[in-house]
Image (cartoon, rainbow, N blue to C red; front, side, top):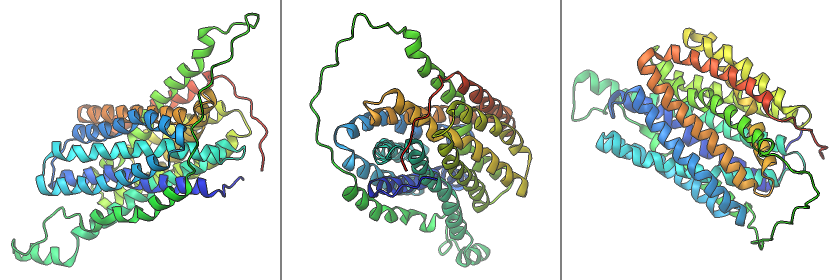
Length: 417
């Protein structure tokens, strides 16, 4: 098993983890705020998450192109600072105004910060790979998945602690409104952005600055060389596009509604935060395993197997409870997350001269389809129920896996240790 040791890699990997901690807390935070501070329907929760993800998705190619020019040191560091600070501002606006529309403004800006962090991270993870691109990318996403796993549990525990303390219990029992702690208190959650300051400093000192390269004219095509049809050039992009669109319902679309699904079953914030974290942990660990497999075997079959095997878990998740639900969350997250790094590496292979742009474009597209998936899931669940919607997600996951077989076969190359 390959293990990255470059300081350049670890600066962006830790930045990725810190960024995704704050991004993953958003779904739990909105579910909590909807109970007392800012009343929201499932459609409104889905719309908020969708717009935030679209902001990050659509901006990633731009930030990726900037990273291609100079390495992205300042783009990445400023992006992480924006993600963390706007999380605090979102809470502040929600607590003080109770306005859904005003709360959306910093919530959306937070998505732009995340949009800057990801392409910078993927570019530098690729360039520090030493021939093990799929493996290095899998470790990069492993750190992000750990962040996604830590965020829901962390915010859930802190929200429980803020709303079940002795002062709240006593003052609410004695009916002393002047002294009572207001229901819906966020407690220490609002000071969490301070923890990213050391990571921002590491990115500023460890990401190399590129020297700008002069543009060169492309070489003239030999008239005697065989022509390539437009279809053959477009086919890999079309197949990958359909795969990502279908996969967007499974992840990241559906995972944003796991907290809502189990909140509706009566689980506490720490409980539905924990099962969301379990989903992301399983996705993180499986990504490294399948990323190493993709460096050695046909990546089409690797992606197909993960997506098809995830379908039964998504189908059964809404009709289970307790430990069985946690087991299904492990299966769903583990299988559906296995193809994530492979998709990014394939996009980088298709556009080798602009890895930052390619990384930002494909991950932006993944996030955009996830954002659309969140909006679709939110709207469908208000009409047919969240349980039935998750079972539609299962069908989309299986169809996405089948589409992987239409991607042209990739011949694995020799790697260095």
